[in-house]
Length: 407
Ligand code: GLA
Image 1: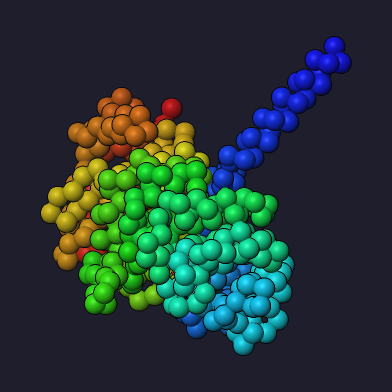
Image 2: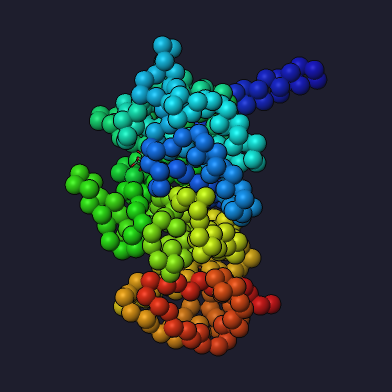
C-alpha cells in the first residue's frame, strides 16, 4: 500500500515536472483582451519618470482604471544606450532618476499592473539595446522589477527566425517565474496567428496604426496603416483568436486627432474585434468626449465578453457595413458602420436576415424569437427586432447595438 502511494507520488511529480518543462506562457493570463495604456502613440521615446507618474495619476483620476484598464506599459526609449558591465539593461538615469523598480512600485501602488518593451533583434526600433542573446537575463531583470507585461518588437532581426525568437522569450519569461502577459509585435509578417497560441497572449496583426480613418501614411521604407485598413486585414484571421490568445490590431488612437465620430467608430470596431484595448492618448488632458469613449462600460463589455469570439463583417454594400459579434447568453452585438463620405439611411428588417457564424456555431433567425435592442452609445433601449430598424447614420459614424434574447 505504502509502495503504491510512493509510486503514485513519483508519477504525479514527474507529470508536474514535465508540464512545467513544456509549458511556455502563463495560461491563466489574458482570458479577456488585455486593457491598458502605452506610451508610444503620443510620446514615442520622449518619456520620463515625472511625466509618467502624472500619467499614472491621471489613469486613476480619469476613471480609466475603474472602467477596467489595468496595464501601464512603457514602450521604446526607456533604456540607456548600453548595457552595464554585467550585461544588464539599465533604465536611462536621466529619464528615470529613481530607477525602474521604483517606477514599477509606483504603478503597482495605484492598483495597476506594469508593462515594459523590448525587441527580439539586436536593437529596438528606436535603436536601444535589443534582447537577442540576452533573453533569460532580461526576463529575470524584468521579474525582479515586478514587470507584468512585455511587448516584444521585431526590428533589427536580420536572419533571426521569428517563431524561434518569440518561443525563446516566452520560455525565458516562464523560467523567470513571474506571470507576465507576452505581447508579440512582429506586425503579422510571419502569420503569428498560426503558431503563437501557446507562445503569448496577443500578437500584432499589421503594421503600425496612426490616427487616420481611411488613409495610410507612407514613411518611405514603411507604411503606417489607417483604422479602416487595419480593420479589413482582420477579416480572414478572426478564427485564430480566443481567450488567452488574441489578434492585436494595434493600440488605440482615440483622442489623438480623428473626429469624435471616427474615434467612436475606431473604438467600437476594436471592441467588435475583441481587440486588446491599449489606449495611447495623453490621459492628463483628455477631452470629455475622449473620456466618454474610452470609459463607456457597455461598449467595453462587448470587447470583454467572456465567450471571446472575434466579430465578423456580416454585410457590406456601398460603404455601409454591418459587423456582428456573438456574446454570452445568446446575445449579440451589431455595429452599423458608414465608411462613405455621405449620410446614409438604415432601413433594416431583422426578420429578413438570418445570421449564421460557423466559427462560434451561432445561428439566429429573428422569426424564431425576438431580441431587445440597446443602443450602446446613446445608452437607450430601442425596442425589439420585431420592428424594422430605421435610423440615419452620418459619414464615418457607427451605431452599436446589443441584442438580447427575450424569453
Ligand atoms: C514598432 C512597433 C510600435 C512601437 C515602435 C517603437 O514600430 O510596432 O508599436 O513599439 O516600434 O520603436
